[in-house]
Amino acid sequence: MKVEEVMKRGVRICRDEQSLADAAQAMWENDCGCVPVASSDGSNRVVGMITDRDICMATHFHGASPRDIRIGDVMSVEVRHIGPSESLADAEAIMRDAQVRRLPVVDGDQQLLGLVSLADLAQRANGRSKKAGITQRQVSETLAAVSAPRDVEQLAISA
Image 1 (cartoon, rainbow, N blue to C red):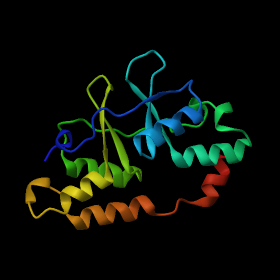
Image 2 (image 1 turned 90 degrees about the horizontal axis):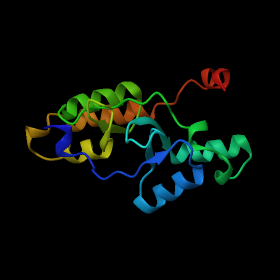
Image 3 (image 1 turned 90 degrees about the vertical axis):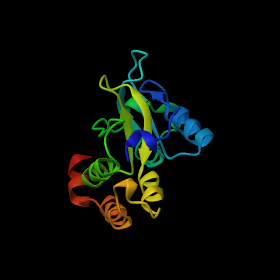
């Protein structure tokens, strides 16, 4: 099964110059926990990701309102992505390796086409068909890898 068969389309984006309040509003309106950040050149080229956790941590550590912090100042810029014709097993492997729950689906020009989540993979692996190409065990192991705590000492050094 290919990523394009399960990905969510019509994903809301934000731009790096927008505020964290804008990202939070987009998440609220779309009942999601992350928003891809697109290039400020007006294209849909993915340049970052912002999560609800990023918003919470940024407001805490900056001691500022979400309206006063730009997305570009706190977004993750090392974004892993996947192409629409790649397999669900490929998506699962990238998620496990990068310890992320969601991947932007992009075309050859890095233009956003959609988003695939670990939940999407779990729903497919839960079926009785082998068509998905991934198993419940693989999804479970990926969730465990994604949920593993990071090295707190390393985080303190990079902060």
